[in-house]
Image 1: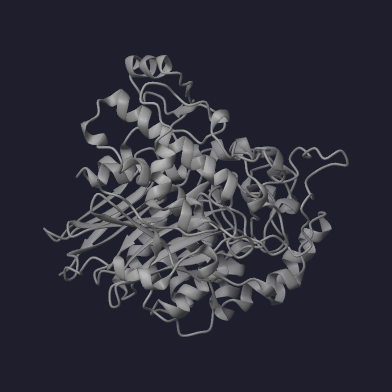
Image 2: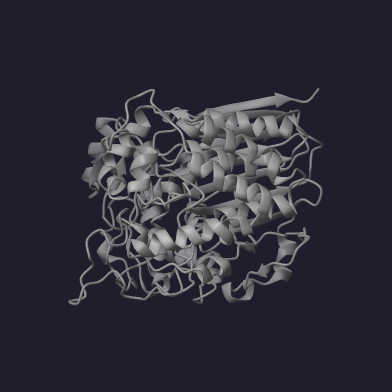
Length: 578
C-alpha cells in the first residue's frame, strides 16, 4: 500500500547573508534520510509564467515585475506588499506568514518563516482574569492582541537572498496602490461591518478604513498615505525602515499608549527563520508543505498517511466522505495536543508522521460509525481573514505563500502615523488548555504563550510534485485551511484540472467542535442524511469559505494551468514565453 513519510526538504541554497538556523534535530529529523526523497527532475522551463492571487491588482503587479525581468521571488515580494494594501482584512505589514520557495537552478526548497512572535513582556496567563477565566476579547481586539510582525523582515530577506530586483522596484506597485487607493467592494464591506467596533476603537484605523466612522459604500476609494510613507521607508532602508527609526518609534508609542506591551527591543530582536519544509509522499506524488510553527504540513501528511492505507478511489461517496472526516478528526486531535513552536518545545514529528503511527491511528476508524471526538485517546485538554498566492516564473522557480493578520482586520488597531494595521495573532496561542480560540481550535501546553515564541498556525502553502507535473496551491480560511488543501490535493492526484481543485465543494472536521462543517450546497440531502445515520453531526454554514489560488505546470505536455477560486474576487493570469 502506498504510504507517506515526512522529512525536511533538501535546501541546497545558502543565502548570502547570515541567518538563524532552524533547530531541525529538535524536531526529530535526520539529514541522512533526505536521500530517500530526491526532487522530481526538472523538465526544462515552463512555457508560461503564472500568478494567482486573491486580488486582481496584486496579480497584475506581480506579473509586471516578472515582465520587467524579476523572478518568482521578486514577484512574491511585490504581491505580498500589494495584498497588504488592497486586502487589509486579510494580511498586511503588521502581520506575518510563510513563504515556500522552490529554486529552479538548485532544485532546492526552503520555507521562510515570517510568523509573528509574542512580545518579550508576554506572560502565560495574560488573557485570563483573577479567577483564571479568559477575558472576553482580550486576545482579539486592540494592540495587546498583537504579536511582533514578521512580514516585512521576510520580504526584505527574500529580496536580499533570492530576488534580483531592488526593493525600490518591487515595492513601487504597493506604494502606488496605497497612494492612489482602491475601490471598496461588497467583501470589504462585509469584513469591515464584522469588525466595525474594533475599527472604531482605533482612531487611526477608523480614519483609514471607514467613512465618517462607518462602513464605506461600494466604490468608495480607500487611500492610505501613511502606509505609502512606511513602504517608502522600507524601500529606502530595508529592514531598518520598519523595525527601527521613525516607524518603529511610532508603532511602539502608539501601542503602549493604548495599553499594549510592545517595546523597540521587540522589533529590533525580530528575526525570520529559514526552515526545511515538511516533505512526504502520497500515491507517487511528493508533497512539500509548511513546517512548524505551522501545523499545516504535519497535519496534512498525517491525514495522507491514513488515507494511503485505503483505496479511497474505489469507495462510494458516503464511505469516502466518512473515512476522510475520520482522518481529519484524528489529525486535528494531534494538532491540539502536540504542536507548537519547535524552537521552544520538543515536537514528536518523526513519530506523528511514521507509517506505524498512521496504522495505529487508522485502526480505530469504524467504517460504519462516527467516532465521538471525546472518546479519542490521549488528548490532554483561521474564514477569509488570511490570503494566499501561487507564482510560477518562466525559469521554473515557484512560490506558494500564505499570509495573515488572523481575524478580519486583525486587532483593528492602526499605529498612528504609520498606516500599519496590527495583527491579533496572539489568539492563536492556547491561552488556556482546552479553551477554544476564535476559530474553535483548542490547544495544550505545547502552544502556550511564552515571550518570543511563535504561535501555532494552520497556514499551509504546499507544492505537489511528480514526473507528471508541479502543483502550487494554498488558501486562506483559518482552521479550515489544512482540510481545504487536502481536498484540493486529492483532486490534483486524481488528475483533475486546477480549476476543479479550487472550486471543489468543501467540508471540514477539526476534532472539536465535534461536527462536519459544510459549505452551502456542498452535499446532497441524501448524502447528508446518510452521514447523520452514521453518527455525524452535519452543520451547514451560511457562506462558502476559502479562496484557493493554484498553478499547475504539466511537465509532460509543458503546459501551465492557473486558477483563482470562484468564491473570491481574485485573478489568475499567465504570460507565455516568446
